[in-house]
Amino acid sequence: MVYGIGIDIGGTKIASGIVNDTGKVMYQKTVPTPKMGREEILAVLKTIILELVEWSELQGLSLAGIGIGTAGQVHFYEGKVISGTPNIRDWNGVNLRGDIGTYTNLPVYVDNDVNVLALAESVFGAAKGYEEVICLALGTGIGGGIFTNGQLLRGDWGGGAELGHMSINLNGDLCNCGLNGCLETYASGTWIAKRMQKARQEQGLSADVTSRDVFALYRQDDPLARRVIQTMIHGLSYGIVNLIHLFNPQAIVLGGGVMSEGQWIVDSVQKKISTMGMNSLVEEVEIKLSELHSNSGLIGAAMQTWLYK
Ligand code: BMX
Ligand code: ZN
Image 1 (cartoon, rainbow, N blue to C red):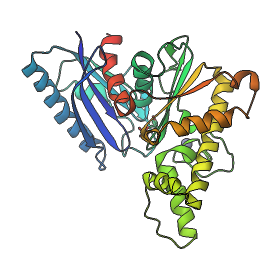
Image 2: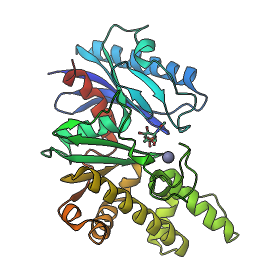
Image 3: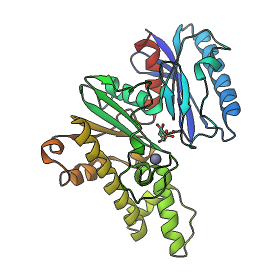
Image 4: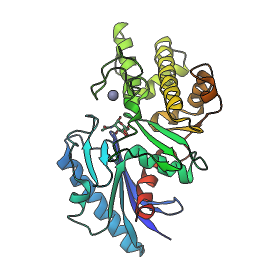
């Protein structure tokens, strides 16, 4: 059996653990993503990694390496975060492989958080068995991973598949990547909350709402929440139809925190896209819910240690 450390660094939390090559998470630890910036994040990573290494030694497990998935545009071959939106503060230019190499001799693999989520879904989850499949994770931001010919599409250095930053409206809200109307401004947890806050403020109501509150209000038939969620489903469907037009995939897998709201989002999108775009491309695409849920990033991060060695 092979064991690897997996670490999934998102805009809100860092999930970490020891994973074996059947996809089982043996030991897990989740902490909030530090808000102060790189020094603090690197220090937290060091503490986590040393703790996981010690735990493995006590269990007599030998580790294949450390696999990281992080939000941001990652140079896959150099193990560096090249750039990113401010969702993670002061994270651009961090040489993760170099920094972790100062306190461990284990090999270090670094990729974008949703590329590794896609990797996990392709082996153990909802993307299994498809050669042409796209994963979208709706969380703090929106990230993507594209499989074509059964391989992750990397582009030149690995920074591609930023599917959340595909604009679906020239005149849309300004996204923190600098474009207007990105998919992320319609269907990420952050923007579901933001849209609701704005709508409530306009009505003189308390703007203290999270994306979870928006879904709860939606279930109670709150008219503002209905509008925000309808806009989200419409935006998400537009983005997905763009992806279908571009890549002719067999399936699209939806994951990330927002999708813990359930299968009904998948069903609404499946229904909506059936009336949109080029029928020949859209009609047979299956929209699916992630099967590994909140663990997919962590499992995918660790998988790098045995897949790429
Ligand atoms: C953002 C972008 C992506 C990331 C995605 C999901 C940054 C820092 N983030 O669009 O690289 O994959 O969010 O990230 O540039 P999460 O924070 O929702 O997990
Ligand atoms: Zn953007």
